[in-house]
Length: 135
Image (cartoon, rainbow, N blue to C red; front, side, top):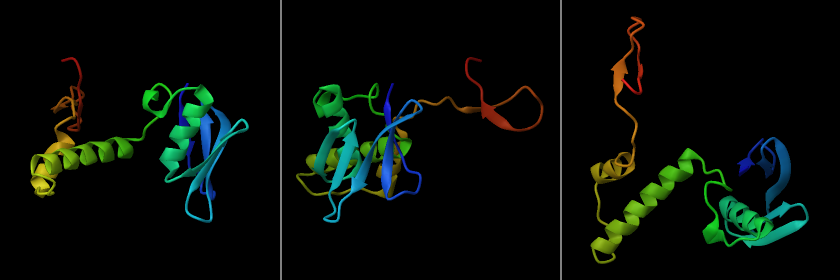
């Protein structure tokens, strides 16, 4: 099962595994983050995600680099952010450290990795379009 952060509006984020609450990540007064799962505590992290990743790595006995989608559930926003940051990093490297790009380049980078089939009309006759897979 994967570990997922859950924000219920509290000043901390719960960490859930399946349906069980197993820990939490809190923000400290100095702006750093502390995570706790079953008595294992990680302090001094820079973000919610860093605290969650380091905490899960500590609990599972692995390094942060070895963590993958099997252990940490990543939200779609985090996936898109990673795609955009990878694009910006590659553009800066290609242009000698200067960041030069257009909005069209950014849109292309964000949509280039999508593998969804095109929208096709359904056979139900309602006029709505839905994704039809396998036809």
